[in-house]
Image (cartoon, rainbow, N blue to C red):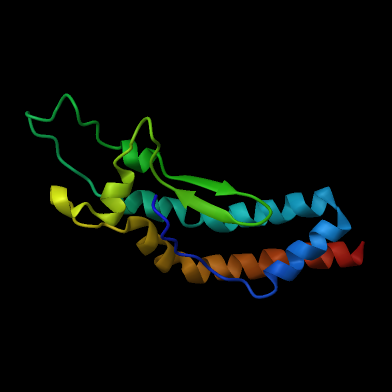
Length: 142
């Protein structure tokens, strides 16, 4: 989707990433990636529920397959970040038009991904803080 993003900034994350690179600890990087994924997976079901539902009419019954956009909501995570994406070029190329709107076609924006993140931001922050603290504690204790 276009360049717009809704994100949660974590204080000290850049320093943590720098330290991970210096340590060259693959296991620690893998664990941070898992925490990123875990935090993002809290938002994915909410985003799927927020996808606009459309009823088929006899006119568009052949070309419209309901549920493709909701099924395309996926979590992508790395040691640096996590993201929730919707739509693919092959199966649901209209995801950007649905999310950001397309005024020339009369499509109003339905920012279901942003709303899902706003609803779950507290849980994401709590999960992230708890899990990253546990990862760091386990690393310091070993």
